[in-house]
Length: 362
Image 1: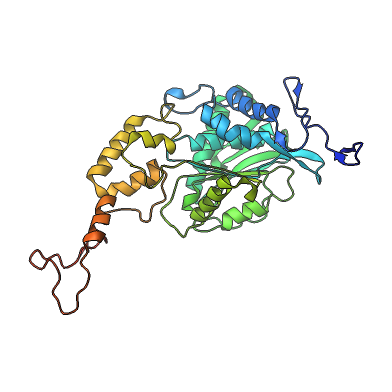
Image 2 (image 1 turned 60 degrees about the vertical axis):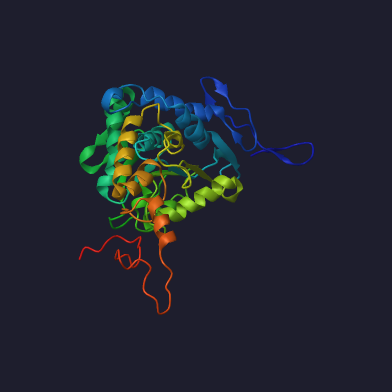
């Protein structure tokens, strides 16, 4: 416990986390550089990329991944009087980015770090998603990282057929859990990686994992997702809460939020706006694919919402659009007001009304 100072107040002990012979001497809530550096080094020295031209190369975090996500997520600590120890400040993390910005790889690294890097006995790490196939996407990346890493492959056992990675030294494991499976209560997670929350029909799996962490010293649940198209969904509710937390961190100091999107009032075709939702542009994400999809969306209104949702990370109101957004505003402006006893404004052209609803298939 902390010692009492001259003024009678309890003096918190030093953080004490040691890395490469350097110990953190800070007290109180603080950023522990040694903890952050430990997570960053684990990624670069033990994890590797698994696909395309980057395969087998060390997974060196990009500047935005390191500074904006991993360092605060693992480096911010707070004193916990119940455990009489410094623990991670954040217990819930929310990462919301456009597609193909490396979310799966980041979650895979986080899962392996929680499994091995925290050095916790009996750690249970769960990879969650709507169904087993989706949950396996992050698991498969993590499993491949293990197989390609001499250090991790010597310590961990990968059981692909049951989607489980085991650390026999600490009795810990990482396995997939799907929302469509029965019996999701009873888990005692030290860590959870939650992929594509936008597909969750409700909060049951989230709540089951969240409430199962209560007996752990410094549990962490990290969700990564792209924007959805249902304003009444669980994911939209969490998104709204995370936006409020980003505006006011004191609202929930145990929650980390990182949301990147192109504002709805910004020009979606202006390439200068795209990095707002795609921090990986110019790094490992090619702008060529975005240009191609933008061109298709300009010419085919039915593809515009998909471009906005998946590439600009904007929450849209419907999965498909039959009329471009600028045109819907024009249509509403030109819709004739009903006039008692009078014929519609444009009878000759048959335009008795202009609707923004899709044409009937009949």
